[in-house]
Structure formats: structure tokens, C-alpha cells
Amino acid sequence: MYRFLLSRQWVILTLVALALIPVMIELGFWQFHRHERRVAQNTLIADNLKAAPVPVEELTSPGHVVPRADYWRRVTATGTFDTAHEVVVRRRTSSEDRVGAHVLTPLVLKDGRIVLVNRGWVPGAANQRDYPEVPPAPRGRVTVTGRLKADETTGASGIKDLKGLPDRQVMLISSRQQAELIGREVLGGYIEQTEPAAAGGSPEQIPEPDHDSIGAHMAYAVQWWLFAAGVPVGWLVLVRREKRDRETGAAGNGDGGDGDGGPEGAGDGDGVPQEGGDAIQATSPR
Image (cartoon, rainbow, N blue to C red; front, side, top):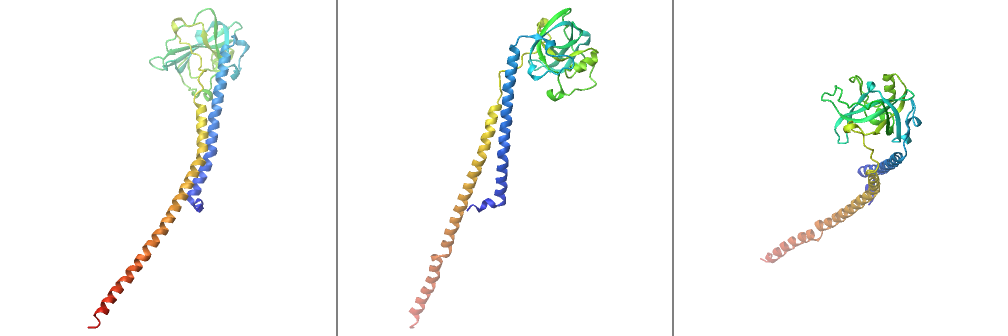
């Protein structure tokens, strides 16, 4: 009764089931690894935000690529803002998801080198090709405290580095690009300013990154693994149902054949001639 498993339909169904199991298991591990990365990132953010701030020169230098271990490290920098080379970073959103720009202002350190400071978000101009209204940076010598971040890239951010933009407008924060524009040494990465607070709340400083939620990746992983376990169970249920249906059909066909060609047909055939014969014998003496 299991020969039906060799039919084309069941062979295809079995192969599909066998292919789905490893795919679902792999998808489960993919979500599990995403969960692990999220937990590790939350731990890194929390630890770096708790650490005491250090001078930015201790963690980066011109051409330096900020490693992930130093993301969100609290740093300080003392110098004077170079507003002549200030630029805005287009298509950035505020904490309320309003589209505008980030203000990127070079800070000239005492040794003449520069560190880029993201002072925060401002609304965009009515015409996106116009330079937005940007509150002036503090004058004189200032000490800035903030979070160290790595240079932005298209691969990491998904933002295309468009060409032909209006003057003093960029798509990505890149210390290398700004070094070429300014013509001076720029420390790798940049600072997200948290102190001092901007006068009047503008530019709107960037809030701390979320490091409390872990998302639903673990739940998705468990779901994929349950689906993988359910495939062989579902296949077995279908096999048993098919076997039962075939057995029921075979039994039904056997009963119907006896009833159609059996005693009832034979009785009809015997009875008519006998009645006719009796009638003939009864009238024959005449």
C-alpha cells in the first residue's frame, strides 16, 4: 500500500519537503545570529556610554578607521570651530522623523589638526538645493563632549554618495573627503556632540542610540525551527491519510462488484423461465 510513494507526485512532494528542512533550519540560525549581534551591540553601547570620556586624540588620528569596539565611546575635544568649512549632511531625520540635515562643523585642535563635530539636526530649506538655516557655532575656545563614530560609507549606511551636490552639502560624513576639501589633517571618524547643549535647542542634538530593545529575532528563529520540525510531521500525516484513502477505496470497489453480478441477477434469470414453463405445462392437456 506504500507503492504510491514512488509516483511522480509523491517523489516531488518528498523532495520539496527534504529541501525545505535545511533551508528553514538555516533561516532560524540566521535570525539567531542577528539576535546575538543585537545583544552584543547593546552591551557595547551601554559599556561605552558608561565609560569616562577621554581626549579624542587617544582613540583616533588622521586616516584612522575607528574600530567597532570604539563606537559610541565618550570623547572630549578642545579647540575652535571653523565655520568657514562647515557643511550640512542631507536627508537626515530628527527624533520626530522630520527630514532635514545634520550640521557638520570642523573643530580645530590646539595642534592644528581637525576633528569633525556633528552638532545635530536642523530643518531643511524649502528648496532642497538651498543651504538651510544653521545656528552659528560658539565662538572662541570650546570643549566639546560627545560620542565617537566611524566615517560613514555607502556599504554600511545604504546612503548613496551623490555627486554634483550644491556647495557645502554632502551625503555622507567622511573625514577623508573633508580633509581634501579643507586641505588639512582631519582625525578619522567624527564626534556626535552631546555637550555643551545648543543654545535654544538648535541644532537638535542626536539622541543616544537605542540599547535596550533586542527585537524579535529570537522569536523568528524559534518559529523557523518549529516550521522545520513540522515539515516531516506534515509529510507523515499526508502519507497516512493517502494510505487510508486508498485502503477505503479498495474495500469499496470489492463490495460493489459482488452486489452487481451476484445472486440477484441469477434469481431473476431462473424465475422467469420457471413461471413460463409452468404455464405451458398447465395448458398442454388441452
